[in-house]
Length: 307
Image 1 (spheres, rainbow, N blue to C red):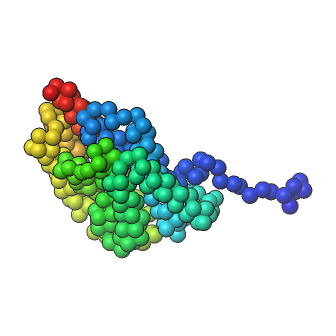
Image 2: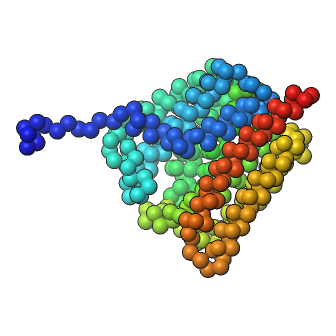
Image 3: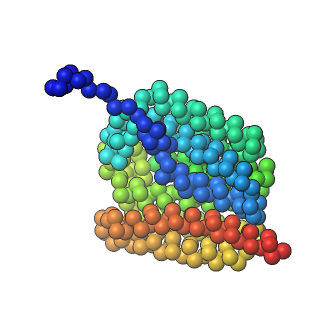
C-alpha cells in the first residue's frame, strides 16, 4: 500500500514498447534496400499492392529477428548502458510475451510474402531471420570476432526479398546487391564497435576491437571498404546499370575510402579512438548504402525508359 492508501499499479507495456522490440531504427535501412531493390528489379514501379505487402512483411520479419535477439541477449543487454532500457532488459515485457509477439510477426510475414509476393521471397526473408537469430546471435556473437562478418549476412537478404517478390527469381545482379551489403557491414559495424568496445569487453563479447585492438580493426575496415567499392562497380561491367549509377558509386566510394583512410591514419599515428573520427565513418556508411541503392534504382528506371 502507498502512503495514500492506494495500491500502486504495475507499469504495463504499451504498443510503443512492443514497437521498440522490433528495432525500428535498424530496420529502416534494411527496408530501404528492400524497396529500392524492387524498383531495380521492375525497372520502374513495382505496383502499389506488392510494395505495401513487401514493406509490411519485410518489417515484420526483420522486427521478429530483433525481438528474438533481445530475448536471447537479455543477460548482456542488462549490463550495457546502450541496451539496458530495452523492454526485455527492464522486465517491462516478459520473455513469454516477447516470444509470442516475435513468432506471430514471423509467421504472418512468411505467409504474406508467400501468398502475395513469391515463395522465393518468403524463403529469402526466413533465411535472413535464421541467419540473424541462430547463426549470428546464438552461435557466433559470443564466441568469435568473425561474428559480424559471417552473421552480418543477415542484413544482406532484404534486397533479395524485394527482387524475388517482383521477379520470382534471383539473377547475378541481385546477388551482387547481396555481396555489396555483405562487405559493407563490417565497415559500418566496426566503426561503431570501436566507440563502444569497453561495453563489449565488460560483457565478454569478442568484437574485433576487443580481441585484436584498434589497429587491426581499422586495417580491416579499410580492407572491407576497398572490397565494398570494387563490388559496387562490378554491376557496371555486367551492363546491369549505366553511367548514372557508375558516377554515383564512384563518388560515394571515394568518400567512403577517404573516411576509412582518415580513421586508419588517426589510429596508426598512436592516437586513441575519438568520436569525431569514428562517428563520421559510421554515419556516412549508412548514407553511402542508402544513396547507392537509390541511384541503382534511378539508373535502371531511366535507361529502361530510354530504350
